[in-house]
Image (tube, rainbow, N blue to C red):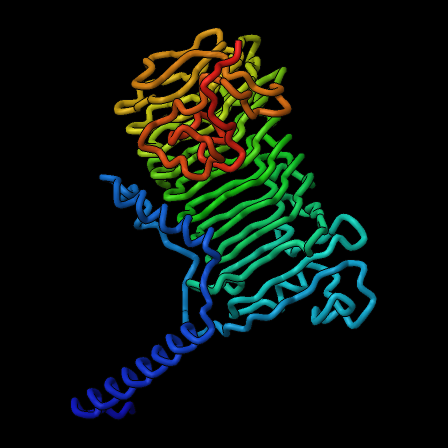
Length: 461
């Protein structure tokens, strides 16, 4: 028989546990202040941008996503903030306990097993004997889960040893599956696949940073985000995939400074569905997107033919596509018919903003809009496409002029005197451009970056 507690006893027990919780919280705050543990300024800047971007949106999130069950649970009290390093090197000959380069784990799988319920931990990976061939006991070669997550201001990091380039080749059907939060993946190469899977999957996650990585030659997509938010995809190279970067039912992410080229179907895709939710309120900026699309039989997406630089699919609303260079994306063939070859393709999506982009030399259409109420195209250069516009008109500040690339397909910086210099949106930030910068952002992928071409009063022929 269970003995019932009195009302007074119940209140006393509740107060006791409340006081314990407050004490633990106070200790954690004091620890944080003493150790000054925070994200890097660059990551914090991205999070600030996401918050600022969300505050400017009328519909910050598709409601159907809010009812999706999440596999990620954060228990701040169960994470040990270790500030330790776990070493991985498949050529190490020591004790293989991950404690040093000499005693490094021979596999990433072993390091992930060691990383559990702790934060501020870094897994460093050496090139070792070359490619890492490992097998995980399910369809994914590696699973980075919630136990591997960091916490706010204390992310866990998986990165290459300085100066090294570790390469991972998946043995299983899919490559990596990441389901977590506050994790940084940096400086790794993922290539090939052993089936029809994607190279790297980020799913049911938030506050992930994926930067300075290379993805090539999987059987399906390079990098896929599903039901993921507040994540930054930065400065990666992705090529020879089916589609380079594919977002499904994901929102409030930043996709920036990536080089996405020579993928079979599309460079960057924003997608979703009525039942799963849509990809909304994302920022796609400062990317180089070129030479995507099969030269032969094309690809097929949900009743629409593929082959484009950037593709915004049905229901992907309120996204910002800015300061990208989108060039030479190819038309494919489907059942003997030429299809797509669009620079930017928008299908039944509303209130997307396109600005400060350069869209050139695509094989069929520069910017193709199919039923996109509220879509704006401003301060962009759309030039030398067989049809520059379909169902959309150039808005304020837009031009159609040769941007004067230094060398198309190789070097997309523009020459001094290009008409795209100092012609971006006057309200856009420009301060990162070298002086003289005309106090105004350049169009294209190098706008508001240190690689922007300087201003000149003399134009080139």
